[in-house]
Image (cartoon, rainbow, N blue to C red; front, side, top):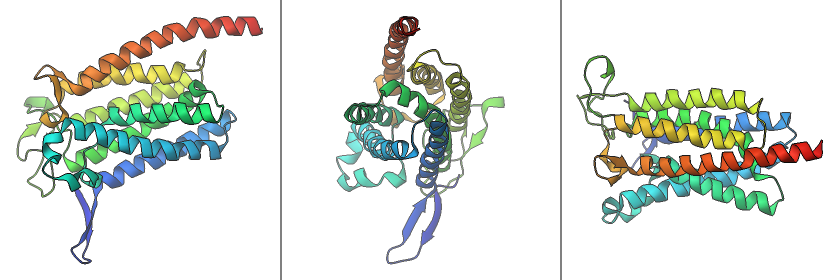
Length: 266
């Protein structure tokens, strides 16, 4: 599509990639939404911004680390390539898990309720992720498998820096996941206004995204995402199963406990 946004002819040339710009835009939009919603429930903007800073760092490190683990054979011959994140190569689940761990540590240190703050952040995460998937479309990463008929919606041109195979009709996997993320964002926004206990929105996000990602993985054609069972179970599907089970168990555990607490307090 359009992997290279523009190039500055300085020295050997500075390249600005569309992928990196859209991922950054996703962070900005997601944080802006979270700051606005935080004001409504009494969480100060400086707390949101401070935590968001650490989440961004944790997300980039975690997402890159998991990608490097999956693609270690590639970076074993190109060590400096590990640091070229503007060229693509981020695994969302790696970023999600690392950001959760960092958030737990940060919120515990500052004596803030993890589940309440996590509920606040998750709609913005879904919104920002949807925008980031447009970056995947531009870069040609996360491309779909070959398709025909109605589902053959994307054919990538032979463009320099693009990661997708050129001239082959493919499932629009990037757009499919963007649509799923926007749907999750709308569901979480509604759920935030009707939640019965802290943690409900956070866990709902984990469940919805795990299901959506597991389904959408079947339409993916990029082999670099890694497989636990070659051709049958991708790394992301495997992580999705674990996340789904953990989130469901936590939801069942937290809901009655919070309900009992509310009854006692009343």
